Amino acid sequence: MSELLDLAGIFVFALTGALMGVRKRLDVVGMTVLAEMTALGGGVVRDLILNVRPTAFQSLGYVLAPLVATVIVVFWHPHVARLMPAIMVLDAAGLGLFAAVGTEKALIYELTPLHAALLGVTTAVGGGILRDVLAGEIPTLLYDRQLYAVPALAGSAAMAGLYTAGLHGWPAVLASAVLAFLLRIAAMRYGWRAPLARGVKPSE
View 1: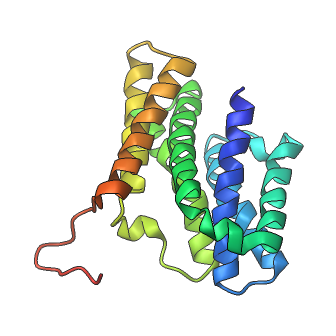
View 2: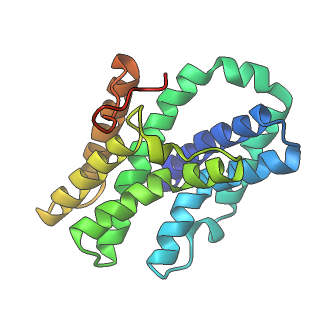
């Protein structure tokens, strides 16, 4: 079940990466690279920090899911773009899931709760950072005006707190993922934004 949820999150993240490739007018190779990096980058970075073999290289599905997403975007990107509101909801779910799972894995490998939470955030947003850098964009993590990293941090912190309190397994993961998901959805719905430095006016 956990692998199916992982693959669903990877697929949705890959769709956003491939769509970025369309917006940047990249060819199919560039789209595939962005899709793979967006979907798998955070998890690979997490596993390398933990000094374990990346999960993405242990299961064929982790590589195939982004490829399938890329093919869908290549042929039907206008239709996929019209589904962006639904995709963003699924993206929020993937964000929460990856933050919680990444934190739990770090805790299992005996990182401190603080370091585990930071690694959970890395799992959730790392792929997006790689996508933005490769696409020539400023990583959204550096101007989190739409509360993307903040929900991931909230979910990761919740997972670390629950684990430390002795609550392990899927109930803790689910609760933490739901917290991050709801915060991200609320931020999109109500336009919540991170503050700027004092006296700096927003560019939008």
